[in-house]
Image (tube, rainbow, N blue to C red; front, side):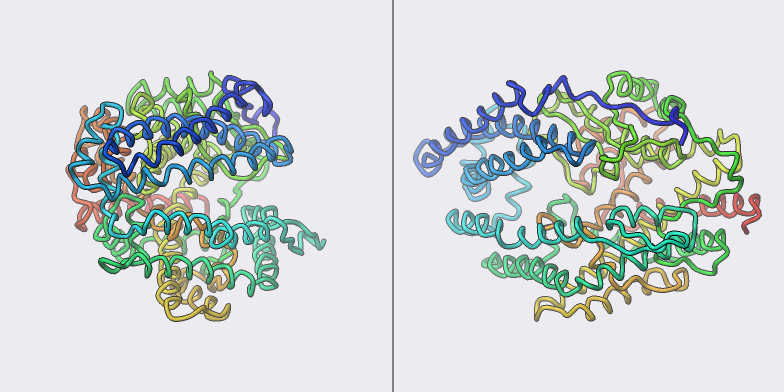
Length: 605
């Protein structure tokens, strides 16, 4: 990789100069003081002046949350760049205890907000500081029938640390230490799971298959442990559903749907739309397979790059040029969007260096004290890196347009979290296709487009189908590894059909998402976000000059509206009906046609 292609290092010093900075220590000391003040006030939530007490606790908790989040983001940023940073690890461990303490003392206010009568809630929300939290409070109260007593909720939270969360930590530890024996060329090499998975992004078909086989072999040695973990996590959640079903039945999908601020009707519509458009996604998958001279993709091909047409002609895209490409594409919507891109880079709010100690992946985060975003990735000059940078800058813009809103309106469901990022990604991808100066660039860009289509319309529903069938069966008893393998294989075959050469039976064991204890069904929000953002993108023409205003307003409302209300207000769309989703997916068909044309030009069709 040419050195000129590497991205810059980000700036964190404006938040804290080190893990031992006096400002950081002062913030954490303040959080502990605020936690003690909240604890002292909690008994007043059951007394005559309970509304006034709740309002005081709200202000204290909000301040504590901002300070704690700031420190947590700082530690995470340090560890992303250098996973061996011992001081950052120590800080992160310390923050876990402070977070638990704040969570425990905050639970009585949560219970007040969810269980108090309407008159008390109306009085509580009359406070100017509290009023902006109206949507969050009322949304949470929709599940008030599920709450246990305060004592029981505290017991659940306490036991969860060495219960459901312990199983998740066990999986994390296992995946972090597991090693694979993989054949690289003619040499057998031993490497970690993450490094082995990285080989599946190489153009060498045999190497990708060897890596996939090595990962499967490694997980096969631990499938009993993985089965125990996934059964325990699901069993805990199902038991909690039973315990919370005092007034009416609580389904295992109720919590994830509510958390994502969508309805079951909307979830049903997006899954039905994916089912209807399976043939389109399968066609894209078979075209990708054909580009590699195969009839169907293997499960090791899900992250395969575009074929290299001329090995000597691709020197990569320098970071500065990538910034220009993204800024120009963003400016097509409004000049201020392009200015935002340059501001992010000029302020050194983007981390794009290449380093051995860096963690893989890309994300956008932000500091709540300064209300400034940060983008993290490893930029090495590939066309996919440009798309990734555009995606993460979209996330950053989303937070930027919300920076002046009250703290209680800054959070939004995962279903809406991909709106600005996928919008920005699509914008830049289309611009790159129009301006591409080589067939290789066009191939790289549209290949990424097809990979996204296949991932969201086939792979995500595969995960959902497996998890749903597993939870339904787990209500009766724990499942054996071979049963989980069967469920997983059948889901792959249902969604991919003839577009896949064989299923990936142990995908349930190798996919971290199934073992996250804080979130279940960490899959359908990706499908929603992908399709919703494309629907927003497609609405540009119909709204004309009014689009940018609508787009900004939509982003600003994501923390204070459900997805359905948001779409109705800003897009004049009904997410609970099939039309919006079908129109969105219809717009993808020409992209698959374009992909086929590029393959034909490259002699790969």
